[in-house]
Image 1 (tube, rainbow, N blue to C red):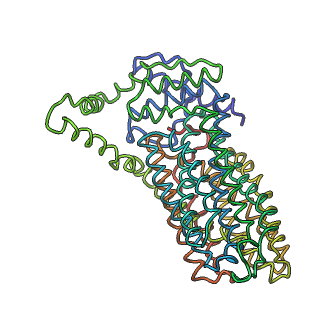
Image 2 (cartoon, rainbow, N blue to C red):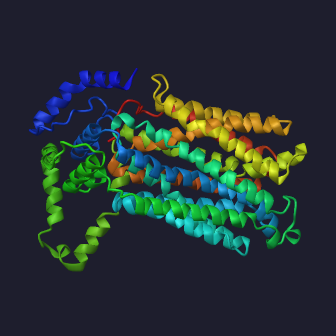
Length: 547
């Protein structure tokens, strides 16, 4: 069914309800309602009736503006976050063979440092974006990553390298919790599927990392079998050049974000903070940037407060303070108001109704399982390819990184396939996520049957495609199922579960011999279980607008 026909059907079914709702608010919005798009979270009034009503009006406003220049620029600039999120785990994997040869350490500790840094980053940046807004987090994450990556290129030993990997990962961990919220909150509801397509940048990150590493590391590295005594720094500079190049490139992307484009604060964040006038101003600026006009007015948003006047009066009373009581005076009042910002209200909002609580819980478990499975296998792919290739008689550095490039190229269509599949009536987001995740696990089990290097590469190609589809849907589905005022916290929560289990992957790798198939069996089982759980998600966002 075409988008036009779908919208027509939504409008036919839901126009009366929207009209009645606006009549109760006693406001003529002049904005065509998006209709029955608002059913992702049923019984949204239990979440926050005033916020929900305002979010619907903002969705209508962005639908009126349409998909224009501002949104397409965001598609590229937020894509840098997807690019970074996959590039740097790939980078640490690519660093393992040459750095192990030079420093003689257990490479799993490098992945452990990365997981700890990413965990800290996703929690800090995700939650802070719901407290202070999206703009600073959006801009700083790439800068932190680039600076510490370049510093890591000069690491004198394994300890310094692991510390700097953890530092750059603090920036990497904040990319997707923030960037997915930014993009979702500026696009019209009819284009939410582009959040899935954004993962094409994720695949590009892997490809760019592999392409740059191939000539540098393959040319300027010791043999994989070399010992530290046989591998001095002067003979093993390829990985250092690689980090200088990738760190410098991330710094360039930061400058493009910060100086070449002005990111407005998210209107949904602003209305969640009671800053309605600023939200209206942002919508009008985006419309002007797109060469369009918007009918949104401050009165439309304020009319929504009639749905819960008592709550609004209480909120305004708290904000005013009016100098009453000891807590409303001086520094103490200022500190107390700031501390209230850090309350658990954003976490509670993710569990506001039984159905929303079940959805959030399932998402956390799925992210946790994939968080263990993906780095356990993907983070060690260069090592797997090198050791298995050696067994098959073709484990040279050149062949290892050539195969890594092949896997990256094959994975590129995954995001586009995911963007097509999530709009299919019988699959949607849930079906696509479940199917691709199960198939990812199946391909891993199949890889253990390989008896030649080419067979191993073939199974890994299948894994590369399905895992890119899986991540494309997962990164899009999760923020869609969180209310915007709690979206950063929700994204941080699932990402934290992902990175906590990701920190366990190196520990499993340490105690389970990487030269055996045990880590592959563990990863495959986690993927299959996560895929089966995806069928239990209670909401299907296809054809609906997130709030």
